[in-house]
Image (cartoon, rainbow, N blue to C red; front, top):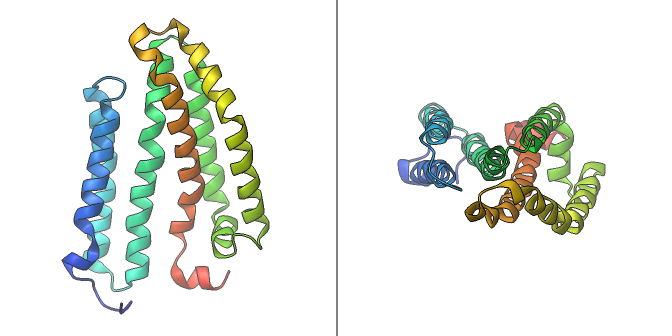
Length: 198
């Protein structure tokens, strides 16, 4: 593929990006129960990235950069909306743990974006870079402690209405997945030529 020409509409995968973002916005607005408020928030975020991606397609001739922008929007949605079920359930159960989940997500978002060059280096050399080794260690740790997180959040959910308790473990898993998406996110802000120089 020629990286120095504007992609055709078919090549742009714009329809896939639109469908992905809107589907995620709709799906997680309905878990554990439908919320118009969350649907408005999620759809607004999704539309922002859809418009940004469409603008990039209309104005850019660098296809690598375009796909990086599109991927950033999609992965942000994959990092943003899956956090909501566990947070909403803890809120319903009147547990203050929802604050910890929100603060953890926001801190990781800030820290990873401040460390985007190290994360970019990790993606370029996943096994040779220090960041790559740290990522694999963290992944292993999360896999080991995930059952304990699921058990803890399920116990925390005992104050929640009975029909929602079964969602607690699922919410914990989705939250962990969202954190991994968040960890990868900043790499897509790095321009191709900058990635080559890392």
